[in-house]
Image (cartoon, rainbow, N blue to C red; front, side, top):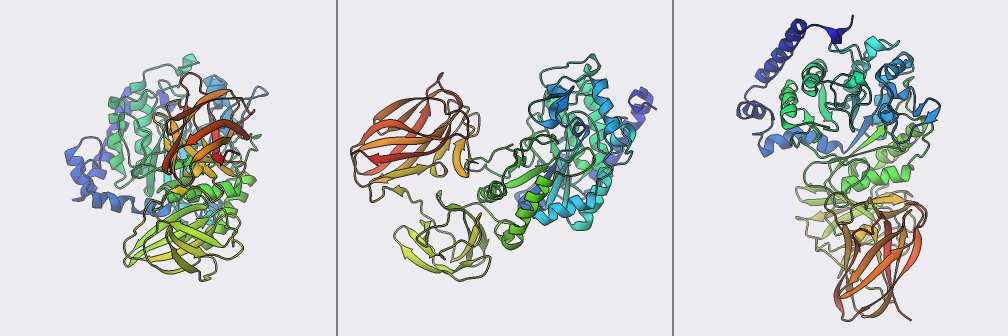
Length: 600
């Protein structure tokens, strides 16, 4: 039977059932904040939510910090290859990138048979890694549903030899192991159903149709299905609001009431902010206001590609987690299973390695809030506020050779300090610049040794500026820069084991450092840079300006030291150095550091 071809009478009955379910869910909310919101706003169920109610609803998510993203579907069958040709970019976009006709793409479903799928093992892996929640693609842009949808035959039950709902056992395993469950749902883009949005337009006559009708007849009832059917659902993760007007978003938004208390993201469209912002594949340099979550791949793809072996190191993944927590966000780290239902071994290896660290140090991640210090060069800091003060978790990536670690600008008294992994007590010393922790000669963990400092009273931290070294030199590292961006968010990323300023595609974006100079004079300026294309930028120090025409280094991870010229700093005191693109002559550059050395 072709369910998609049912008549309008059957459709009307089905949609009436959906709305009856929705009405029942709203009435069941009772006298809480969500019920008040429903009375005050016809679409957004949390419009009148108080701060206390929002904090209570978001509490588990803010505590969790770390989740698993799962991109899984029919695209794992071609696994990045079409007609014997490797198709570039991410695996789950192969239909779009290769412009595969609908009928031809749907034939892949006959080979989607995940007989090795073990939902319990997946959830146990996430839990072992220290992940507190899972978000899986219930339906991605190809329109294929991983659940038994009564709306269409383009689902795992009707279109594949496997013939069973994939989400039901995952939901059961999450409940069994105490892991929260979320569903990703592509509400706008749908490349197989008539009328669904297609970024850059349709390439097959079978795709063309009315988008409003698509939302009414496919997206709305499917969202109602997953919200009504999976009663423990905690997150609804919308994606890519292509062609989503407010009127179209208004069709979907009321359905959120079907699952009172559910958390949604900011990708529905129509101007709805959702509960959290979702930077993708990068970490905002200074975090974001409110609740936010960086989603990121372990290699270069979300959906499985058989030949993508560009795996991020455990060190990078773990330090990403710490970096995100130190900026007040969550980390949603992706795995892309095969068509047989196996998570790639390289992903498992890295998740287990993170889990090993988390077993010792998880308290420095869960339930923490952002770093209170001005930027530090040796690592990151997370914190927890306590009744008698605060607990600082000092994450040391670069172990100090002299045995001294400065907490810059800390004015509080330190009640006690110790190594989290073994409880070894640390001596502390108050100095003019803050508090120094006297640390062992060797790090306990090569990737991140966590130190704990319990301080008395409300945190009191003064911003401390970097000061010129005794030799007269200044090394301005990427991590200590102030980043200014307008359209595209600059970020700090790691390449070759060192941090750099990256994603610098916007020629209006710029970076700067403010520091203290005791011995002014003439300085040689150099920088460690990488980029595949020639680029022109300016270095501004006080009233002086250097215009630099940078030759390409060959790649974004191929860094070279470049001599930029000389500048004169005439007076001692506070100095600012800025690096700004030259309009019309800028191509993205990665920048690790700028160094000022007294001219000889």
